[in-house]
Length: 87
Length: 380
Image (tube, rainbow over all chains, first blue to last red; front, side, top):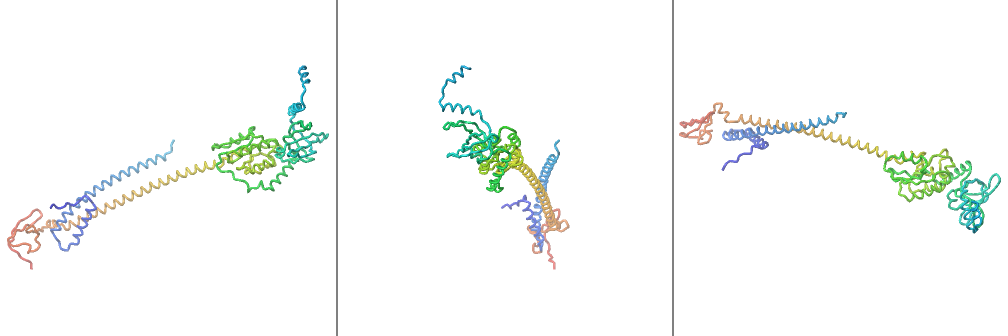
């Protein structure tokens, strides 16, 4: 039976899983190399996916921010036009 | 011509027809006559018969005034008073006597007029007709206005010019306003407007002497004004003595233009108030919009800050996880020269995990070395 692939697209889930892994490492009294390696591999995938997702989110956010800033600037220009006395 | 007169002379009239013809002709002698009242008698139907005597040569003329007119003018005819009567002579057929048919009677002489004015004023004041408490307020935003004045003269134009364009619906009754003779017209005008749907009545005339104002010092008119169904504004000009009609009115002003202002005042104020509210609403809405803008900007800035903080926290979490993993990564040990031995796929941690003769896979950093177990030396 093939092992179920983890959903790595959800950043929150990734962070939760990573947190569980780091906790596991921090609480490990005797090193289980086999399990460690498995967890390291899993964590590496999650970190990579997390970073990629974080970058994508940051880019998306910057796009939205840019759009909002442009709209606000246009609004201010309109306000300034209204302030200019009509001759 | 001579022939015509001859023909007339030959025509024979009955007495009745002849009196009719004569009376027709006598109407041309319509006049005002002045004299002292010497005899007064009241008929069973209330008509008043009196004699007027010339004060110089004591010539006399018999006079009559019908009851309804006598009641209007409010003058009590008695021997010795001096009056002016307006009317025309007429032969009273049943008696065959000439008498002066009075249509209007009025007191003669400024002194008498003044005395009569004061007397009536005192009487009506005692009755409370001029008291402030019984005056009704002029309605706000009136539209249906009744007017009694003369179409002649500048009064009406003055009033209309100052009324303003507030959609007034005016019902005007043209009336004489000069002298005692005007009283019949004024009372009739009031009677007409009583039946009309109006909210306020305005009675107007320009200034004048006590004599010319006689109609406005009439008791019947005063009572009609106080009993009028809607408030009355009097714009009656005067010199010294305020006309009694003005005292009785709910609002008395000195000129037609002020009367117009009284009616349009509430409309003017409403217009100003509307403009003020309009400005207020625009300003208020502008403030609301500005506040909404500020709130949106604040919300956006807070969101940006919050989101950036969140991204930073996530980044820190990822970095922390990376560090922890690096520290605990078994491959890191391989880099340092350690190797991981496994036997049959299982990591060899203790000597019991393998046996002599078994193959062991040694995982080093760049590959796997397969070796065979020859000896086992447990650590003591």
